[in-house]
Image (cartoon, rainbow, N blue to C red):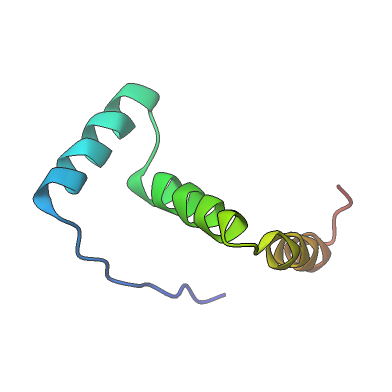
Length: 65
């Protein structure tokens, strides 16, 4: 399976804040950014799309939630 990568350019202040938060919570920047994007999508009325994506991921993994 190939991985798709996207380059994101963050402000120095945001980059520092993410690094500090990651150090405190022992999380990767990728996981924090992904969580923030899902929250943004849900806030914008995308809950239906989020649920559909989760269902597709579960189906692709061949597991039941």
